[in-house]
Image (cartoon, rainbow, N blue to C red):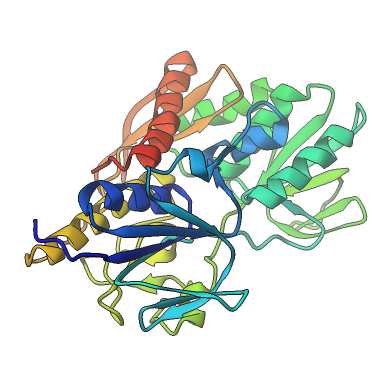
Length: 358
């Protein structure tokens, strides 16, 4: 491989995609000077934030313990990046030959709710949950994977509370027997299921689209939507959701030195998913290596395997998918589901730490 001496690589964001990208560059482009920029000094396992909320696991690991020798960490927020420079909010800047935008997705909570899809929100939710007295009611807003896992984990950890989950169609990301098993798993944990939309939350009351109002001592927002506006602030072309538009190779359509990976990248056929972040980062780094060697970058195609949710400590449901994310009938559940889901979660962290993935 032809190597350019003193090549500078900056990775913006230290989630699954950013960490894997940084460590993979360090492995594959030996002469590169790699710097990771992140607003906090910890790598957060987003797939464990529901456990962080419930106090059943710790979702953060120091980034320094995750980086390969020689990779630098800069703790700070990025204002914008362009023209070979990453400018931080303290006015300092980093130059780059290649950059990876990997800031993930974000949460836009309804006023009166506490988001569980961010580290700061999860920490606040954990403290508030711990302060609730027996008999209190927790409402989890969001019927997708984040909401299901949060409601189940809280119900399992705090059986002295009333826990409900509210969403237009709870567990509609599953079908057939898998769908029924997810719902049954919630019910076994005594989670009340309400198929409706929340329109407002204030003063200990949750208001539903149907006109019903529910008492709620703590309302958790478990819907991940949108991405940070860094790509927009940096003048990159974005789609309607603010995600950076990329070529098939995952390279920005505006700047050939920038690759966007993970939730913040507008990749056709991709949805918000930690399972896609690692493979995208690996593919983008490999394309940088190809370009350095004078070869043509290859296109990336999302490949799905399954959808899965944990339902407390002893149950999980996973439904297999085709590569295009359409659901198959085959599924696993119970302890088998727990083992598979846990292996997948650990695999994501291992890939980020080692820079491996495909």
